[in-house]
Image (cartoon, rainbow, N blue to C red; front, side, top):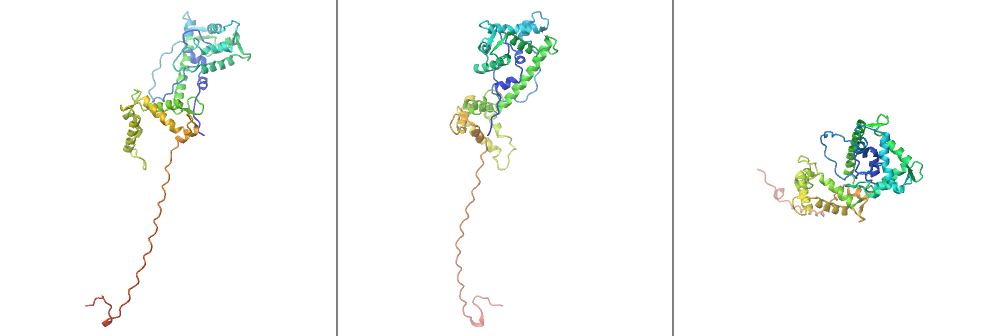
Length: 352
């Protein structure tokens, strides 16, 4: 059975340390015990290889600037823990010195999680913090105490305290952030590459209509060389390949161009000479219905495999051999005439 390649939110988050990933961008408001899941990567095709961009200066995170009011370039472990623990008091609604799961899960909601484009659904954010709650609750009594949270925060401080002297210097923090950014870029590149060939974005083992439309739109927009969000006929005809590529037994370059031009005109319903995203989506939805053989509204692995298996032309049928013509009866030999004078047969020329 064909399986779809997919990478989920949990897998993506596990590849980058939560505290480090959050260090560079702390949203306004109370400090966090740990970061919320970031916006889900948008399904987009992998970009064309380009020269490496010049490195941008790394900015100190808000927490470092807010703690280091004296501009000493150093934050101690005690300062860091005290700063993070301010959030504990905000979450402890009943002021009993512990956080219940429900109190802790408020981290998934505003104002603790700032609104942002492509933010994962609330259920996914709550699941993320529920797992974090289980990690912090080391005695598994269903609540997290101040000492448990302090221990967790102190462990996070070690991410920045490279030389383990109990202090995080400006240089140490900037280096850790730079490495985290590099890992994040690599992760995003890997996710984009996987999504490029993975229509099953939510990893449920089937492709729904929206997933398929996003997948096909992404693939089509790879042809959009001028990045105007549309595909022109010239960009579309790149699919015809090279003019000197004419494998034996396959359509010629001109035949390929002709067929592609005809298909382009069918998709270009408003006849403006370009395929916009609405037209691409309409094409994708029509194709989805053809692949969804059982009409269930989802493409199963078997249906996907069938759609991606080249259909072999049936072998040519043997031409029936024509029935042999009936044998013609041979004419009976003519009776020999009686010998004439001189004994010569009629018609035999006389010798000279």
